[in-house]
Image 1 (cartoon, rainbow, N blue to C red):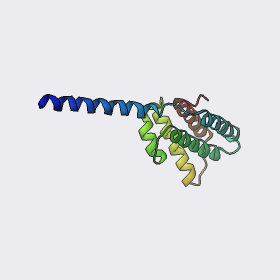
Image 2: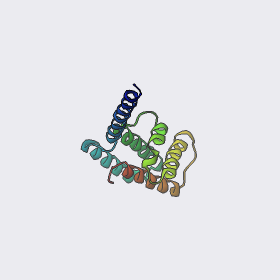
Image 3: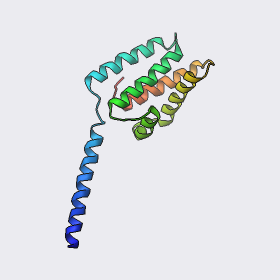
Image 4: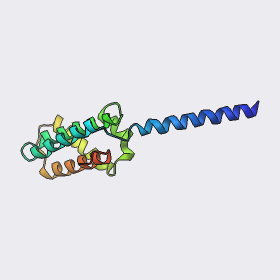
Amino acid sequence: MFEILIILFLVLAFVLAVWVFFAQGRRKKIGQKELKYIHSHWNRVIQIHQINPKEAIMDADKLLDYTLKSRGYQGSLGEKLKKAGPLFSDENGVWFAHKLRNRVAHELGDIRYAEVKSALKSFKRALNDLGANL
């Protein structure tokens, strides 16, 4: 009887491991349609960043949210960033960029161009970490 329980436990553990492996695998690729959208949207961000840096930051943040959603992550962008954290080569940079977006959205003051440049660099790196190939 004890051997049967051990075998049952091992089978269930194997099934769970396979399920987790395939669930994570679904998050690994971005479809061609999404990639095309990401590239065109990123080009727009780059075109407007000197004219309207706040809009560029807002758009880049939305694009990161879209990309995480297309990879299967759910929740608010903050929740998605926490779940996807290990994928980012510069997690602190991603959080800096997202926090700058929050500052832009909720405060009236100006932002320095150096902050915009750094945030856009972090957004681009994060998108590439997710497979966008920008």
